Image (cartoon, rainbow, N blue to C red):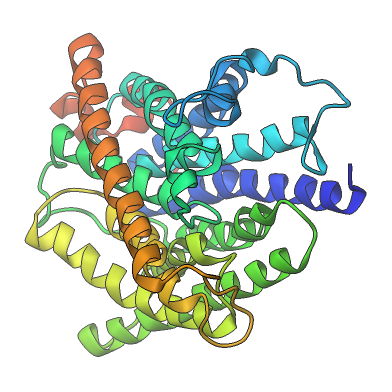
Length: 401
């Protein structure tokens, strides 16, 4: 065991949990109508609790124990064999399992943004539980657990494929199968609390240092560079979104700026262990522009009510960073380069990773949603949607006037 590595990953683990609790919860809650704010917070914290138990029971074993190239074994169910002395690299394996648990928490929670204000609470829980075990844990094994994509040499330092492509594509499928909110897109209310969105986004930004720099799984130079490029990408994409809104509408919005922040963070995630500072700025620029127009395409061209832009920001951002890393890894100081691998060859590996995971996520999610609909239904009643999910489903309200 290395004490410095252990100290840093203890900190990083807390930072990644901060991303969901309360970062993502506040970010999403501020974006919905006031009558649905508590329901979004409930989704995030309930998913966090459920995912933790499932990760302990079987998820970690599927993802990180030996098995086939496509599915981990079950010998670490209920964290069997992990005691105080067990190591994973230079870390206590108990810590490594907890660090990875925080990723398993935030990934299904990201999907909440696609179906807010109109879905049954029980449906959220069942879909998230099945999705964690059927989609997230196997894909984690493919990329980080020694599976078939790892054997191909795919580059995904902190989750462009594992987290953002899986969640983004799956979120779109759920939104399509659930249907749009009443009045979409013409009569959808604006965010009820932009200040809350900014606070949530700020917590996500800080927590993302644990997400990306923590993925070095060591207190070393890679962690330091990952932290730097993560910050630069987020800052760049935020300014890009601000400028686009100023040009297009004449007024830059706070919600728009922090949406750009999240786009920049998602885009740098897979590349944060490979690029240098200049690469981080370029990825922030690319992520800001591409994700902005992806939001417009999904919402207005495709007319899909992915309510809080999970595909456009997370899915598209993660895929963009995963593909562009091959061109930027050796660009400027601080990048790792690709070694002896040709850019064209590595690009094909990255493309296979993105496309295969996107297809798998879409098909598996469609099956999960179909099963959930048959068992307990998906959508709240019209009256419940009008009243708001806070009171109709949880008997509480976010604000008492």
